[in-house]
Image (tube, rainbow, N blue to C red; front, side, top):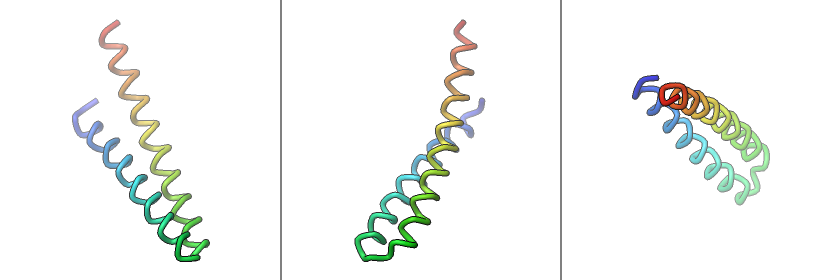
Length: 65
């Protein structure tokens, strides 16, 4: 996979972290609906980043085998 794939995985990890932080702020302000929506968004970004990371790992392992 290309460097772009690595960059995209890192971007998704960063988006997830930002969504988690935003959810915490919303929750702290008592806006539980927004916090829940942001938590769901963070989870989605995390899952996509995880999937890309696993693909990159599998590719790396196949090149060294």
